[in-house]
Image 1 (cartoon, one colour):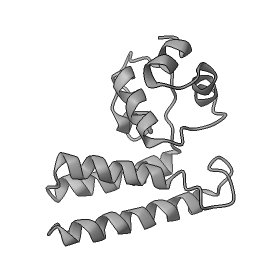
Image 2 (spheres, helix red, strand yellow; image 1 turned 90 degrees about the vertical axis):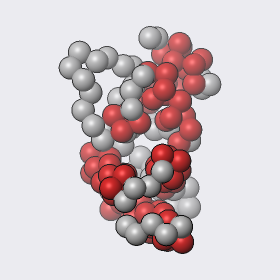
Image 3 (cartoon, helix red, strand yellow; image 1 turned 60 degrees about the vertical axis):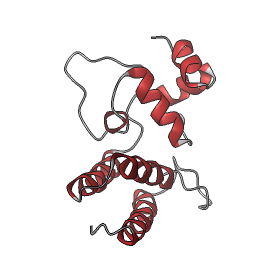
Length: 140
């Protein structure tokens, strides 16, 4: 698939896909990550770097999160699965967790932000998820 083909399929400009591929920027919209994963027929976990690609699998987009952040997201999602959360609860939690890694409240850009700041933002989002699900009777 070309950069232009991927861009048309997920509703972004071709130069945006080029910048993602070259590490210039990362998607700000969690929905763009989900659309890219669907179009490329890979899991969101793989796309964000939380699981290895199958041997021989080829895509035009590199994993979108640093390894420590992707590992933290994967760990949180695994806890949701182990707690018996519904697919809808897991998907919404994943959306919130991914959005937290692109926190625009901070003055620095996501690319220049210190790893610990991103992990702190992710932890804050996780605490919110745990609080909401506790209200639904889920113990994490």
